[in-house]
Image (tube, rainbow, N blue to C red; front, side):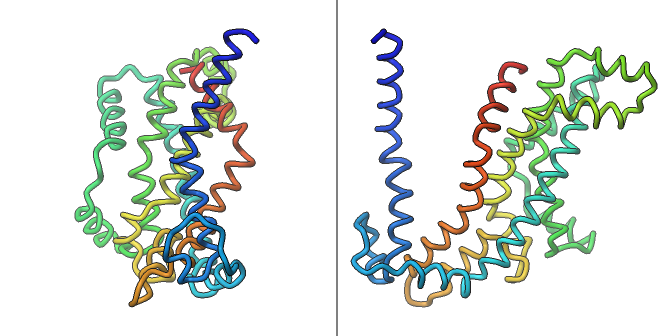
Length: 277
């Protein structure tokens, strides 16, 4: 066995040992306690349940926890937000990447700063009220689009700057419009980095709780984080940890399934984006 092979084995063993207390144990705790009765789950142990209550717990979450409605709301909001942010952000990145204007550079840095600077809530609520969309799904989606745009612009602009403009110039000479160049040339070239940006957007949008708390009143428009919070605090006596953990499992399941099927694309997009950037 060569020195490089020994180092690779040691690295994987070290990463595995690091993941056990920080990743595997918390996941195991959530899953195994979602299978227990309420009294046993309240102890928050890692033991297998003495009395299994899988069907009862998950049925209660589906029926009482407003899960299916919240899942539909989360899918709608996440889908519309991600498509809008990717398309608008890619178009903006194309403009920023090709422009040499000082004003465009200033605009680029302002948009990128939105990643670091937290948005203000009170002016946002007043603006939505003036637009008569306060408390609506549309208003919430617009806020998510505005606050998440900087991620895609930041990732895609560096990618555009690394691409030679030869194909765009040739298409323009052949009579292609800017829309045709964008959809037929730039979007396919930006697919790897946009895919990575979409994964980041899915995680941040799917798990958003702060804005949803203030901008989505009522259970009809509640997303999965809001439904989980309402369900967890609905008991006046104490948390029903078995049902809370079952709700957490079901809320995380769509992201886990998406990652299992798309993990190769995620790794490929990260690798290609690093080579291009």
